[in-house]
Image 1: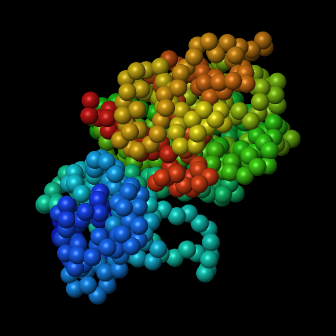
Image 2: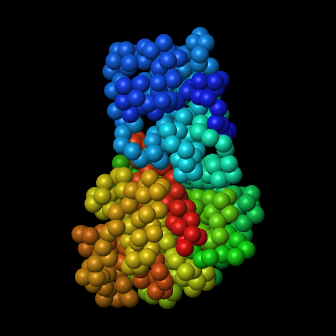
Image 3: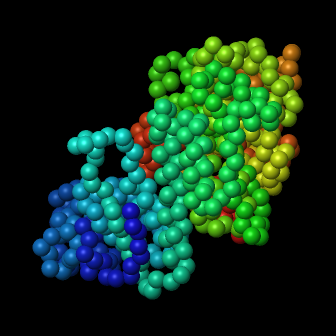
Length: 491
């Protein structure tokens, strides 16, 4: 979709949809609505009353305007707005434009306030509001959706607004790619194709990308990753992408869990729990999206994306409860439950990153535990860190990105649950605090570096749409990661 800026009068725009915000049905109280009401001959209030439109948040009123000589748009859409958050208003209007365009191709979104943040968020919301993933063919393929959109602002369009627009589109594209990967069926998105996609996308942006095959992973000593892969007929892949600007202000490494399908291994999942396990690589998708967005935005921060990718299957060579493996950093790990495989993959990747990349900050994303969903529900990620600076910056970044986090404790009292009689540690704890003990396990492998863990099991893949987040893959974590990097660049 092509997204542009304009400062033309909204009534003069030849579009299919003209989208305008409304905080009240007293249309004379708002300058933009007053002009619109006058163009309709003063009947908007009656139309709103007839259709039950009360300007409440989320309400929409679609009015035909074709044939109206004072309005060039074919349809006008009024969108109810609540509160005074102009950035959230921009998101709401853009999302409404995308979702109102069943067969309309061109839209104009009138922002109630001029600002770089408003333009950026509107652009991202337009791109993602039109997102669709399907493999249907022929007449079954859904039709419609915007192909062009204009964001209407007051005053001259300067370089700052243009940069904001470009940033919004760049983030939207990176989130959309993450969604595509998460939504892709596991026979099409496996460790080999994920690595090829990462290599292809990195090449487009002239980023360095290294991909290791099974033999190279074995040579490196990533035995935990290999243990998870042992039951699969498809080889694992280790992926490392580097974005390095000329004078970076910091070096940040993102590590992503890339389980392209998780059957649970020998501790087999129930059939219902296995259906959506194509989403278990959402951490890898977010990690890829973040580094690509950083490159697109030319951020002055060095960014590394590290992904360990495999399936967790039940083949004859599958790893077993009771097995003990030596991790990349030399710790021995006793296997308790083969369905707790993600932390094993991450452990080797985190340890490698800490030792080889030596980042200033190390962050991982993973659809790690059902326990986190039990605690926080489907629309919020668990956030773990011992570093107060990271905690403050990342929480602020999530708020700016419109993504929900909740900081969780790293209770030292629970660490003893990971003690093993035969190895340095077990990889799971007891029946309670499962998301916490998983995070504590990961912390053992970060080499003492400033670190944060995001358990995105809930918001990465939704059974049904929640507000502006769609059903299926959401690309959760990309926008927050980008905002965090921008905050580092501004320090």
